Amino acid sequence: MQSTQNNKTTDKVSLWHIFFDMFEKAGFLFLFFFLVYIAVYMAHTQGMYSADGTAYLPAGGSSVFDVYIPAVSQTDINTANGNVQNMPQSVDFSKAPQSREEIAAYYAAVLNRAKTDAASVTLVHKTGSNYNGVVEAGGNAFLSSVAKSLMRSFLKEENPNTVFTARSEIQENFIPRGTTSHLTADDIADAACKEDGTYYIISVRLQPDRNPKAGYGSGAVGSIITKEEIESAVNGKIKMENLVCAYDGAVSEIKVEKESGKLVEIHTSLPMYLQLSSLGLDCRIGLQFDEFWTVQW
Image (tube, rainbow, N blue to C red; front, top):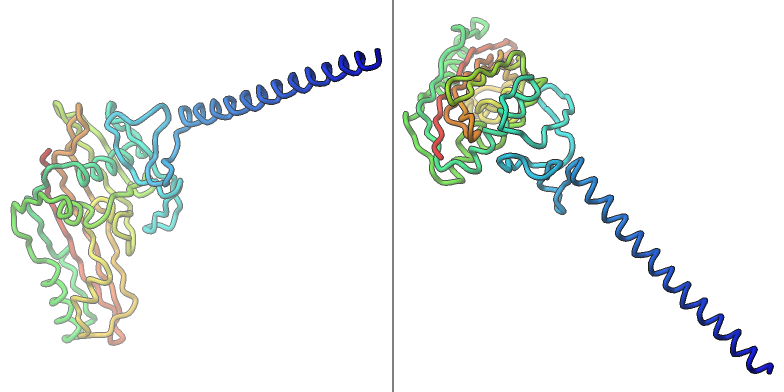
């Protein structure tokens, strides 16, 4: 009799263990699927980064034309004005940009897309001129000769109708030279988008800035000259101090196909003052660079 009761007790314990194991496994499965659901929901509604952090997938899937925009971090530093900006992560080419934020994002995206996807780009012309006729050398003849030498170095006209077809050539030479555009709304003083048949004509005028980095500020809409290039042009003839490239409101206009979002033309004008101190004197030279490019797909 005692043995029978013990067997019944053992059976009850075994059944309880079986029930507990099943319940525990079901709980883990529920938790797993719940976490998967949350991850998918967050990616769909807020967007997500790729595993290596190099590309961003916009909320709800890719953008209309799958524009690739680097996403090293959620913020980017605009070195032209020292501000930290939230960079746009995707652009919808199906509608015309209107606000400064939309225009900045659209402009940067079409330029960067041309660098990665265009079949070729053509530099129709690139010219340099003496901006506002300014050549100030403090009345020093030697410094004046150095200033004029600098002007000759940078105001050379490029060969017209130069075509670039290799991807490396396009990325190195097309605006902005050697990098990508990171134009932001804070860079822009005035902007407008108008329709012209099957095209959008987008024009921007930027805020003046000093020593912008390539791809930022004035360097986001044109190919700037750098302090290093100026020092190379001087080639040790004089000792320069307080070297400043003061851009005086870069202007750019782009022509884009409405339906495809493909860049067709870009005109850019970069007026600036090159300022430096040498021999105890202040020197200022006005330079302006104008470029016109067409893009083939």
